[in-house]
Length: 277
Image (cartoon, rainbow, N blue to C red; front, side, top):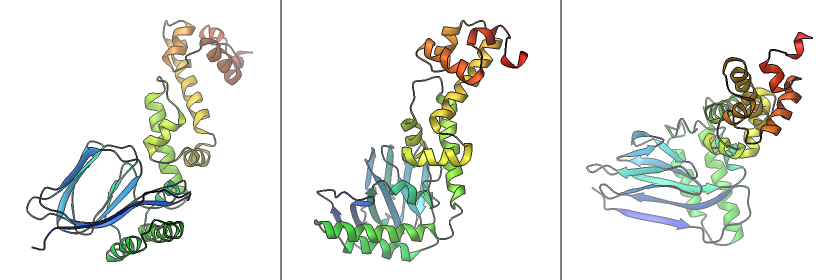
């Protein structure tokens, strides 16, 4: 069995680029070598070239082998560990930037699918090696590494079932599910974007494509739908209904309700909808 080794490079000063490599390298791990549980402040992709290991995220555990790749999302708890008998060897790259979620959205990776088996095969290993070979501390090196990173992401897009509108729809549905499950709490569009694993601007684009409105408008409409149900079928007073559906200010709730439905919450509760004439 070959001896353990590790070659790595970490960027000390991060350049102002829309796609930026944070760290890169390759390693033959010793038995049971692991990292975490912990979180990163960037995306981190590993590609396994030999051996086996496990990856845990989102309450799920994946057993990986040669040819598999796994992705850690920013600010998301992860844990990974090499096998005791056949510890893995992998190549990795950590990266971030405003274009990172847009590019990843075109790959098979998602929060629900953090492990894939890329069709690119060994070409992906070579692409990751090129990122490492381009390493350097100056600005030209950062640009070169970003270029090789973009090429690597292009390989991941090959034969990906997610294309254009399909990727937008996928992330819009993830964001919408989060809003529907947490509408009664004090949540923001940033929270939904984080849950979906994309930027706020990308989530906005996804919602416009899938629902024809912004995430904030979607949340407001959903809260008002729930408010209508409570006003009609529960004994709660208007202020209690407002608090129950996530409106901290009952006066703002009343103004928003009248603007969207044409009647006040009190009138709606009494059955005086606008369509009644």
